[in-house]
Image (cartoon, rainbow, N blue to C red; front, side):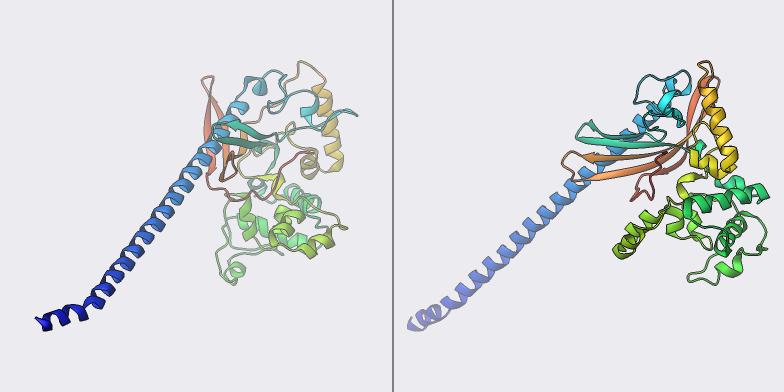
Length: 353
């Protein structure tokens, strides 16, 4: 009896340790479960906010399309300041002294909608220079590229400009023979990593970064290049230097081959026609627009950047789309040329000033 009593007494500590270990084990399990549930809730909340902001951005695309399809834009004069491309006065881009600045690239900011806001910008792709229309490389087309690099990137007469022009044309032509300053497979395959020369039309303007001689600074402009690289010293040095907008904002791969002069900004006209002829075209446009019965040529291709943002700023999402309007049997159909519903950052702003 005494032996049994001693046995039970000696094992009380063991039982206590087992109870403590079980409690520790249960505490760990409960803590882990609570942490997992909290993580799952955060994931679900983030997913919900992401979906909400995405559909807000989709709503912005729809609002932009409604604005583009407005009869006032595509026909008679528009009286509402919130419509795209008013056909008289400030929206022409050719202003009388004292008139307000034009809004050929309308920006709608923070429109309240549902749980957040919608912002969108509409750009007329037909008012830009179609890069693929320069594919033949005629003397006139080469001059457009020279003007583009000079006015939009600050590249004057010299080897660097010739290299870029010849390389752009070599990228688009079908043969594998490079021009005097151009590049074909032998150059691109020697890069790390190497790739082939496309020998075909550009699919996007951003594709120019693959062409010999093109840098982000040339394509997107001095301010964007410095901001992206975080080069504060370079940006500070450039404050006293002339800045350039970059060539991307004047180019398209979706718009018509023949630029719509009435929706093009003055710099685009100077790039395409040269300063003297562009001045004549601007004067003719201004004269035509003074005639109340004159209806300018209509554009049919537009790019849209739409951003949906929740009211508390917890999530935002941007969509980039390019649409082309096609009329058939008096019905206007919308054809999507490009759709990017995960736009991280738009490289340039296309203000027409």
